[in-house]
Image (cartoon, rainbow, N blue to C red; front, side, top):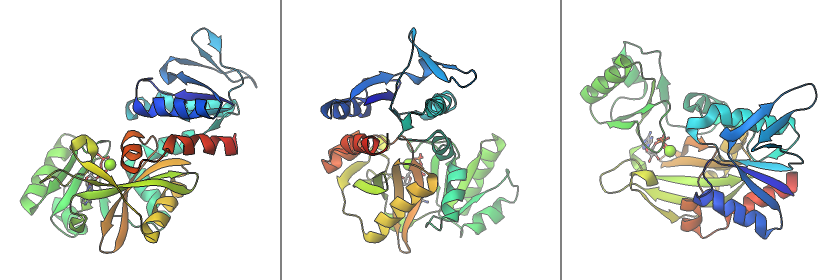
Length: 290
Ligand SMILES: Nc1ncnc2c1ncn2[C@@H]1O[C@H](COP(=O)(O)OP(=O)(O)O)[C@@H](O)[C@H]1O
Ligand SMILES: [Mg+2]
């Protein structure tokens, strides 16, 4: 098959592993920078012009679109869809996943466990917002943060009030969320491909840190999911319409609570923690569908 990987950086671990896995299974594979694709639209002949030529006969694409290039990246993925190429991540699902609030709304409708969350239009009733999530400690998150940046733990009412008012004053949109202390600074990343969990790891924040992001110095180890956790991960990916997803959840006293669903989950952390060939699962997903 003719497979294109949409990635801005050919040197990334994830990109290289996908190339390797595709070649191993005898596919033709090329890395395409989505920002260098020109989208050509005319009656019944959608096309993409890339480095001096039209891209012809593409069977499948693997979008690896970073958060900062969501708009153009999604347009390119959509164009490949118009050209009848199979995509491991649909353009609509990709877009949906980039909005934390919209994602939580969709997950809640799908009856998936979530930490109680409040979003307001810079409400002045900060006290009311704090009470809605059960008081402090609570977590405040910038709507568009990633890698743990913009996620704040407020331990007291005074702290919560000052932080929320500060963000409001800057017109920075935040969600306010109940703090799940039983998670003890850890979370679970379940990697879902084609409706199955193909690998899972537990990430633990470094000493004194409630955020378990690997980018914030957290460490990861393989974990065996409970049935309930596995079902939650698969359902969350399905609710978001994602064939490939990194589902993040907290272990709480009332079962797994989903934090977010990632549409371009990295392969390095999960492959190293689990020793599994996740890239191969993604290529197999293409073989089954393209
Ligand atoms: N409500 C919460 N209760 C306890 N810990 C949380 C909560 N929300 C986030 N965390 C911790 O902070 C980390 C980062 O939060 P997350 O919502 O995933 O933001 P980001 O998109 O920046 O990764 C999570 O992986 C988790 O360890
Ligand atoms: Mg996260």
